[in-house]
Amino acid sequence: MWVIKEWYQPRARFEEWVDLVGRWTREYGVRRWFVDSDATERMLRTAGLQVRQPYKAKDAAAVSVNYLNSLMSRGMLYIAPECHALRMEMETYRYKDRLEGDEATLIAKVAPGQPDHACDALRYAAFSLSG
Image (tube, rainbow, N blue to C red):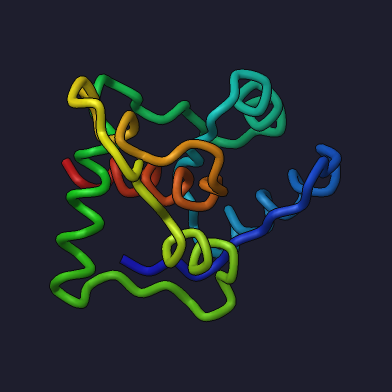
């Protein structure tokens, strides 16, 4: 699995990023985008792109993380050096210092308040590939 691009711009306007999404769709032959917002899904559909919301069943995150860990342990996950945000998030990702014992999902075990947008995006894409 190759992660070759990322783009993050706080409070980006629709016109700023929809053009980029369209270019990447054509340039890389993207068949489907996974987005974490009803509004974003509607906007991208209106722009003529194939889009769906990520699968978020009870512990879909654990399935995705296990898949990504499996790829990493076998040297089968490559993240381009230019993907600074994803690399930073993965290197600093933390779990709670103390678990209460009632954490039913992987996400419940994650320390709150840390940057995780890039990790979430990777999980959403990986889940569609893990099955």
